[in-house]
Image 1 (tube, one colour):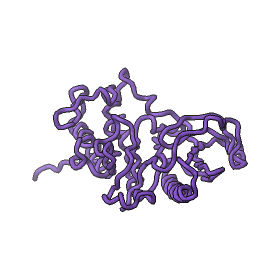
Image 2 (cartoon, rainbow, N blue to C red; image 1 turned 30 degrees about the horizontal axis):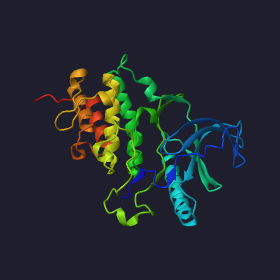
Image 3 (cartoon, rainbow, N blue to C red; image 1 turned 135 degrees about the horizontal axis):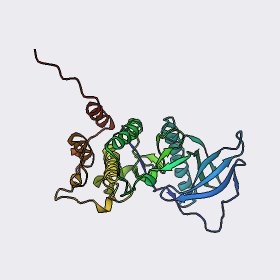
Length: 303
């Protein structure tokens, strides 16, 4: 299976400083209201879809090619098309914003996605209010469902952190956002360099949350599971990743800071093992262990 990962080798997040997007209308449809942020994906805006009933809010992501020579633009368009197709597939899951449209204007690219009212997970985490064990279990059961889905599609998120998870206002479901400029691993720019199964890629992610192999440009599905484990340790202990203590093997030493059932503690520890071979490899494996923990099989009496 080919894995899809976040990268910025084609599209630059840098905006032209002399152009203001505010109050402009893109593609005769999307009225820009405010800038939400920017990063490896590009600039992100809140907008109104003026051609839908009641002009609902949406999110517009603006990407600019690094250069505009014809050969480069041909490659950029091809990758943008593939990125959009991947986002279309991801958006079929209830826990990923839908892709509503994608288009090009003046050799610059735009993606339009659902706006999800809610709160960032980062707003829920604090040292004063560490999570309870039931909260930790509910988080895993919720987030692992969508991770299992995206990994089955051959997609790796690569930037899982509290700021990229929204708790949807209407029902409390966790939503993954900011997959970034996803593209196929076998990049059209450097096909001869992608010899390994997971390819050689620019390192994308957030220090503290990304797994060691991801920091070396070799992400895999268990890298996402590592990030979720880090988030969970942060939620349970109140410590940020920069405060975590590691042993000589690179594994986190956190159990003394929070008393948990040994089975749950071992599950979390297995998610964040330094060496990816020692971790859970699939979200389904964690979900199965959670099921056995929360609903253990009955013990039959001896005859």
